[in-house]
Image (cartoon, rainbow, N blue to C red; front, side, top):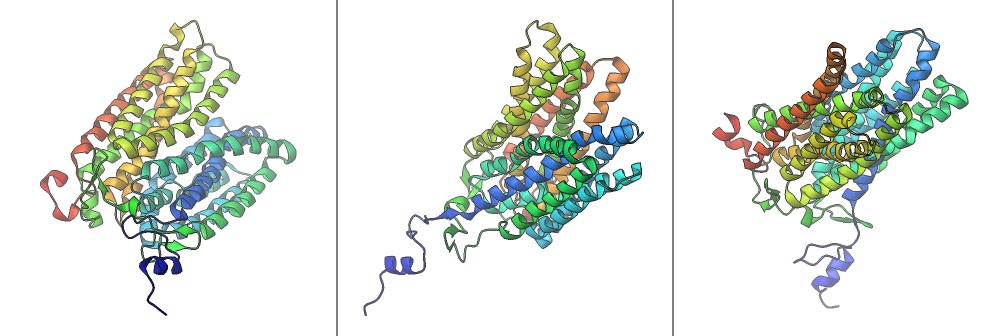
Length: 454
């Protein structure tokens, strides 16, 4: 028998790629990971934000104040942000998959336990603490780490698709919560959510999530576990591929790098602006004459459009670089909030939909681009720890913005001042991110250049 040709050898080992093109038949497994993360985000964050539906039922049963109940959810937001760097370090050391498996069980236990509460401190323990840990372990930080490992060329689209699960989950689980409460009461509804949480998230984390591509075995069955065209070079600020720089470095060096400070500051300012609007825009619309149903419908409209905004801005960032779509998103946010402030000057209700479209696309864009920006600048084994710092900034800014909006309204009987502060926050965030365009991608931290560390 004669020697095998190169093509015969390729077919026997299941690799249909040519040496020149590096193309393989089959589905790139990274997209399976994206699909799994989309559903994990929809379950985790959809169930989490369905608490607004449970809020009314709990309020009716107990004599607790609205502030006491909402305080538990505020603790959830703050604590999930505070522990993000810790979750990131676990994802770096143990892998995102193991972290998400643990998170699915903690998340489920938190929901199931809320069904047994009889004192307000129980709510703070199970919702404010336990559920915060569960969401953080299964949520943005480990999922962003996976997207950065699996994608470079299409990183923006991958992050956008996975993060679109938040809006999808709200659309599914908020109505489902109301149906379950009407059918069996809020306690049983929490128990059912707890069972659904572990029943859906644990199998996805165990059987669909994989840590990273495998260059040694690119083709496994029908799936490709490495895709040469995804990792052909590093991304510059203008979106073009450039020479690879040393990936990562000591974590202490990364934490002292100026680009991380700019990213964390931009994240804080963005979170401040977004949550100021998200928490208070419904009340503002009612104050100026819109019905409660119309205001709530606008909120739902923002949730739907937000999904499209994430994917659209993610796609643009893969083609144009991260900074330009980020500035476009910031511009849309500023325009949307400006319209929101000016609504009482219009006789027609039509401008409120302009606010919803601009704010939804801008909001979707900025939250999608932060993981991609961080991955471009700090790709390497410490990415999750670094992104945990950025995500913590977003959570702290959001907590401050939601509180500041109510505080300033109590002082002035108007939302004009907090909404103007939101616009200022968006503007400064855009300035911070635009200044990142001059840094190499990834940053050669081992060189300890004066530009990076001064």
